[in-house]
Each structure stands twice: as C-alpha cells, then as structure tokens.
Length: 178
Image (tube, rainbow, N blue to C red):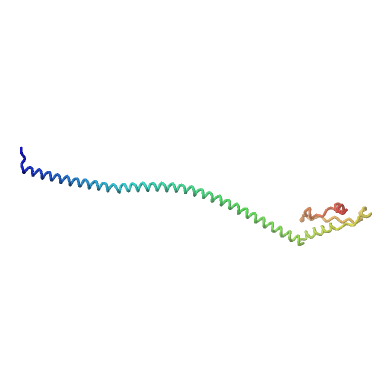
C-alpha cells in the first residue's frame, strides 16, 4: 500500500500540530512548575519565620521566668533590708532617748558639783564637818561630856546619799586619826 501525498501532508500537519501542542503544553507545564516553586518559596519562608518567631517567644518566656525569679529574690532582699533598717532606726531612737536621759543626769550632776542643789550643799557640809580633826580625848570624854563630834543628821527620804558621800561613823573617825 502506498501512501498518498495528501495523506502524508495531512499526517505532517497533524504531527506538526501535535508537536506544537506538546511544546505548548510543555511550556505550560514548565510555567506551572515555576509558579508552584515560586508559590512554595513564600510558604517556606513564612514557615521559617513562624518557627523563628516561636523560638524567640520561647526564649522570651524563659527569660521572663528567670527575671521573675530574680525579681522575687530582689523583693525578698528589699523586705529584709527594710526590716533591718527599721530595727536600726528603732535602736537609734532608743539610743537617742538614753542619750537625752544621760544629758539630763549630767546637767544635774554638773549643777550639784557647782553647789547649786541644797541636798548636795548639805552633804558637802556634813562631809567637811566629818573631816575636821576631833579634839584629843580627855577625862570628860569618857563620862560623856567631852568633845566627840555629833553624829551627822540622817538623810531625808527624798535624798539618798551614796556610800561615798556619807561620812564615816564617829568610831571610825577616831580610829582613822590615830
């Protein structure tokens, strides 16, 4: 069987048409692949960015937890220091009150030493009288008419004399003189 030239021409045209269609479809397929690749690139980029954001969020949460622990520790430290400061202030207030009391006592002692208080003047006079030398013993001293000094008056209840301010008893005075 022979082929006819018209059939050959028709077959060539058909083949050429199919070739063009294959080329056209191949081009469209390549464009679709390119489009798919381009479409998946932003998707991959977005997925990478999403993962990076999740990682940063996790790191931030970890940092917040660590900072919260540090803040709690600092708050406890501040509370302890505040309590210590308040205790020191209380101690200082007590010391200042004691100092004021001591200053008041000092003023009384200074005034007393300057002879400004009657009780101190009386005690000083008694001490001076006790230091006077007693006359020597005579025969009348034994009978009770001699020159023994009179005993100093007893202190009043409002004025208490310390043992250093009290004059020694008369018997001790006589023994000291010998």
